[in-house]
Image 1: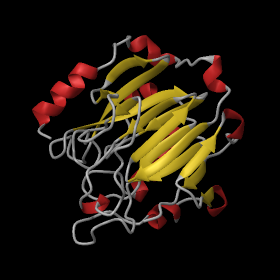
Image 2: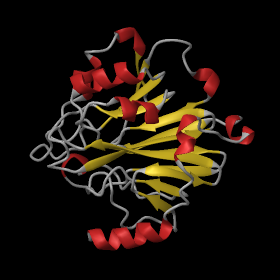
Image 3: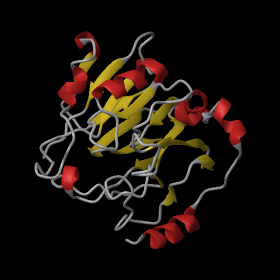
Image 4: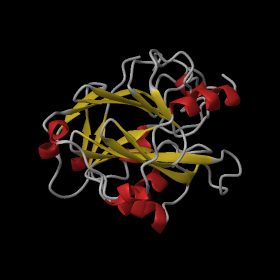
Length: 258
């Protein structure tokens, strides 16, 4: 899909901007807080977040390079968030139904869910190679979620204020030329102090070995306290606020069956 076609499609589906005052305290309905949040990994940085009948899909991709052997992530959703318009995290071609789509930074509201899109460079050269990445912050089922997309630059003070205190952080760790490497991801985690971390965008068996420059997740896990790391034998994680650790940061590594 050409960029101008995507812009027309997304522009017609953009949600109402509700003002920057939302970023100081995201709210959710009591009904949402009574449900689990189900997080499903669809490969790379693509995840489906489901609670209370609402489905939020982040970063659907095309199957090529590092994502060549993943199954199609084009699943039904009510809302789609894109971190960029690159094919590995911003492809809306063949999405089923008629979901709302947001791909630009700003404050939005969707059916009681308040969202904040935060600009951060997609490379280590001030955005000159791959432009701007959008990190997405919202609350669902009482969980404060921050998906950093394809962040590659250090988090500055202004960005940190907008990102808040995440309960659940999804962060790229595989490195390459346009996302955090393990050391950079570790520094970002120290800055944000999240309760639960799910690493994203690392090399798996789904990659085309000749065209994927990402490192294995093990390179990142070696930098963390082993007692805080749990490998989950599933591509899904169900979580509610009472499951969050009282202190410290835990790492949850989801599995993907090729």
